[in-house]
Length: 582
Image 1 (cartoon, one colour):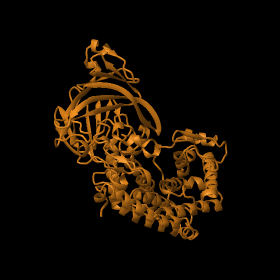
Image 2 (tube, rainbow, N blue to C red):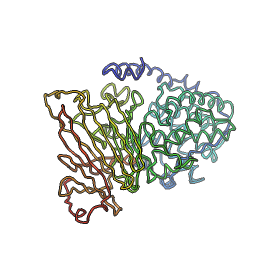
Image 3 (tube, rainbow, N blue to C red):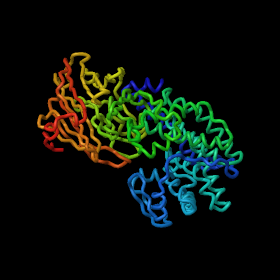
Image 4 (cartoon, rainbow, N blue to C red):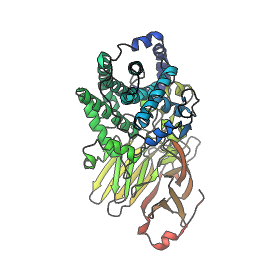
């Protein structure tokens, strides 16, 4: 039975998938055995070949901090001291340990020249002494994948100051880790990323050992890419950040293949073209990357390093991509999630937040979502509907992550996520109209959520309507005929909000921007509540506007709202506000 069919079974799919995952554990134990380690060590590479270049920007200041004896990864710190040993010290968190063992910090060192290369060599050899044979954490999943990629990109700088014996050891260790990575029986999720990392290692290593590794990895990559990159260029997880990171990795591999005089597979070049358009689509007015579906935000400088490889630039920015839609006019820019979240194993980082939207005003974030990502190890509650700028009914959720035994085996995949998501787009000379709907509330309440967004090109005003439409007359499970609902607008932490005296309008001010924005509405109640968002993996607190109403289960309800610039209002309206409790 296919994964998509199993997802429709409330209890069967998690149980069957868990049994399947448990069946893979003997293979994991085999990889830790002495015989498996010995087999993965041959054939040994003979020197170096290509010099792969990771296009992600290096942070020289972070490199100098490491030289001074301090690591700061994911917002947390460890200070083993100058020439200290971070491997023997307890990490402040699992996320920190993943980043440390993933070796992403190597490029921050090697960019400093000889001093950074010497320190990188010392730390790499120290890691090998403790973890080079095998370790369940350090040789697992994405940690191993990122270390293979990062060491391959830094290996020429690492081996430059090394002795011949040390250089041979680093090359042999990299080859064994890359072969182990390819043998991981972990299914299609991250298969393309694993194959890309192993291929970069194969391109970097010389001799038959490197060539065989490269051929094997490219074969895996060609088979994995059609499952990972959708025909319209999105990542199968529907995460913008996942698409950006895969674009970085494939671009690095493409450059290494050029150095080797090897033609890249056609499937890889198609994926690169598609992913470039996706990164272009999700790049915001301020140059940063939009955050949806478990993808952490990315800074403008980080995104610019990828966009520099995009020859088309802004000339071919699509209006829709991977189930998302863009609207833009005057100073407002809107991105809306108009499709179902990923299913099955692809949903382990997905968010159950149907029709979530983000609004950017004058190039700055105004309305956002939780920004949840697995890398931050944040509460799973930030993946639920209340943590997004969309509508929610009662205290219910439109899907939730697995928990308990199933989550321990399968990860926190989504269950019961909203289905029946539809989107229709119309464009006219003076306006853009987007109509969306989903059936996430039908099973429990018999209500369909419909969201209508109209962006006026001339005035730059965004008008919205969130409607609950009954599909069948019914009472709630507790016999109620009415059910409360909310429409939430989570504000960026740098945005402050004031409720006007009419209790129907909210004045929004972006820090450092003299222009204000009004959010007007016809809700029965308007409140300001606390909000939580993740930025660079760190929790930041802000406000959210909560519009409340009551929906009759046999008649539905609606809330209308609009966002417009405050300078279009009279001076009396500008000052006629009172601060509300947050």
